Each structure stands twice: as structure tokens, then as C-alpha cells.
Length: 245
Image (cartoon, rainbow, N blue to C red):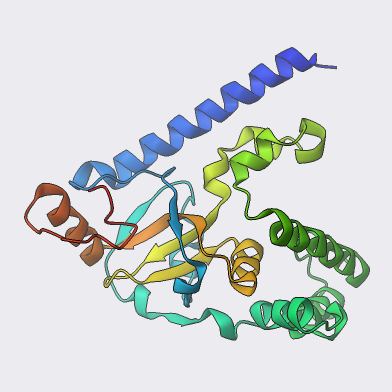
């Protein structure tokens, strides 16, 4: 058995490795080509109500490392749907605000059907019973956020023991596990990942949550570059992705 002191050092070294690798890959892939900084670990505090769109056409980015920030052209930012039309959001509203049982909500009915009828493993669950138990865990998360406010992934790590969090949280940089968004050509936020946290924050009406940017449209990045090099002056950079440039 590995002594705790060595295990902690190994976890730290591996976390540093992951952080440096993500930074280097982002620099090689995108950051070195642009004036405005692109930092895979930068968190922007945004009002979750402003995340109105949900990214569709996900196959384009599905095989790309989520630790690397991308800049992409094309019409991917127009392949979107409304976040609040998704059955998870509808179900969270029904359960948490209207008191519906989880089993009565469309998201849970769809997921359990796919598990039972198609033999899929979803959310780490191989049976409807396992998924119902997972949903019960969401109740505790929701109540904790409602009572204590939103907690960042780094704060969760520092406030928990290794046994509570498991090895994954020590291995990976916590910022990479926050809600992630894409940014369209006009600066519109498009939801990418962090389903439960984003949905809960919207249902609770939180004023702000931390997000990290995964993909920026090339036209938006060009605007960031103009602001960064002084070619364009923004009197009031109200957009979080322009602040500090």
C-alpha cells in the first residue's frame, strides 16, 4: 500500500503534468496564433440566465480534448437549440420547483428507458434502480447549492478528503471540470458541458457561476484580438470574454 505522503505527492505531480500539458496543447493548437490570450484554466463568472443556447452538432468537437481551448470557423455556432427546451431542464423544474417525483419527469423516463430497453450504461448506471439512486443524490447537491451557494470545483476539493472525492479530483485540474461554454461569432454563450450544475444554477436563479470557454468562433476571437491590440476600443467591456484585454 502506498503511504499517504507519497500518494499525495504523486497526485500533485500528476496534476501539475496535466496542467502543463493542457497549457502547452492550447498554446500549440491555438493561443500562439492570436493576440488575445487563450487560457484553458481561465474562469469567467457569468449569469447562468445568459446561457440560453445549447450546442448541437456535437460530433465536430466530440473527439477533441476538452482540456484544449479551440478557435473554429464555420457555422457550428448556428447549430443550436434552446437550453430550457431540453428534457433535463424541464425535469429539474418539475422536480425541484413543482414537486414532481423523479420517475414522473421526461428526462428520467427517457434515460431509464434507454438503460432498460437498449441496454445502455448512462451516467454510470446499468439499471433504472441505480439511476433513481443517482437522482436522489442530485437532491442533496441541489439543497447544498440552495443553502450554501455555488461552490467551485477547487473549493470542493479543498473542503473534502481524498476518500470523499476519489482519485479523479486529485489527478485532474479542477477548473477543467467547471461548466463549459462555447462562444458564438456575436459573443453569445452556448452551453457545452456541466449539465447538472448549469441546470441547477438556472433553476435556482443564481446571479453568477464560473464557466470556462471550450470553443470560440474565429470571428469572435478576431474581435478579442482587435480589443487586445488596441485596434478596437470597447468603452464598457460588459462581456466577460472581453474583460481585461
